[in-house]
Image (tube, rainbow, N blue to C red; front, side):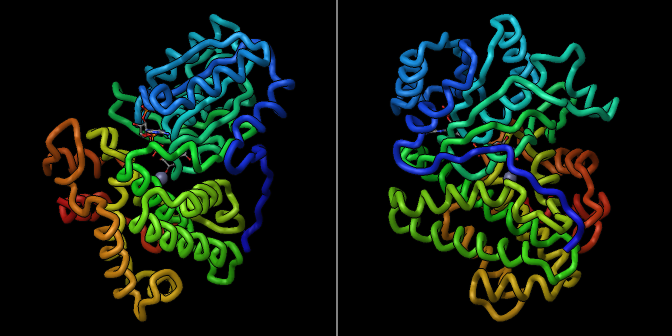
Length: 381
Ligand code: NZQ
Ligand code: ZN
């Protein structure tokens, strides 16, 4: 194990009815003005908005609505929310949604109390926020694990950039699998694939092999595959959704990363692809990940072989990758960039820009250069 420091800022309330229980415990500790932040219309349709707002009002809170947080949340939306939070003297933010809503709120929380622009602060001055408006996260679409960390992924449209901004971690998270009941099946499976990708990308960082975190990562991968398969048979299997919800949180709460380096090259490529195309995160990963792995399989043969055996019951590293590809197809997720919903046509010129602007990871099995990233992307067409 490498040296590490680990602490947990987020209290988790898991299971059916968890929101009511969490808010009963937590609201007495928050100030009076609560921003209830959410995305499009889904939470109004499925009743979650009414339920949360009712609990807040009953607890005597003044509720400030902040709606319309889009998938792949933009920096402009962060700034809009931060202005509203500052103007209305918001004491607490309740983020209700998937990774996009939660991420947007993490940065709203940090930006609202700052004089300076948070992107400039982090990327030009190299400083990070020390605090922010306290927040809680109610997960309504699972997969990113955003509810248990302080990192947000934001699209800065003017800069054609999608990447991490450090914000505020939620002090509590609500994980009720029944809150995900109305998520469209393709989003349920895209989210679950994101979880699988987080565990794989963590496992493939080039640390030593003798690491308890790898054993945990492999267990999360196995469990994610097993429960996604249960959803292929019955998308409404709430036991499976619950397992996947906890897999998701576990994959991104730092447990798997303890004592090791991580890869996350697929994520870096996908995020920049998202900056140009606004594609769905989990689906972008599903297209890129197997192609990237074919490029690096020889550089981490033993790790890929272990992955093959323990996650897919396959004998060799290459057969493990065949099984991963077959699994993605079985999930009905895209395997080609042309299958992704995109705001622009995905051309080799766009892919060149993605390759030229994405982050290059230093601690994966083999560091890629921009030409190879471009080749990988072209192989995804
Ligand atoms: O906007 P509404 O109408 O709510 O619809 C949303 C959205 O269209 C819908 N949805 C959410 N809850 C629902 C529901 N539909 C029906 N019933 C419900 N209960 O789901 C759609 C997708 O939501 P979104 O939040 O965009 O999905 P996801 O959770 O996959 O989040 C993706 C974002 O998280 C970032 C991604 O890059 C992307 O921007 N990530 C964040 C990470 C983190 N902070 O740790 C790590 C990840 O690697 C990832 O990069
Ligand atoms: Zn992800």
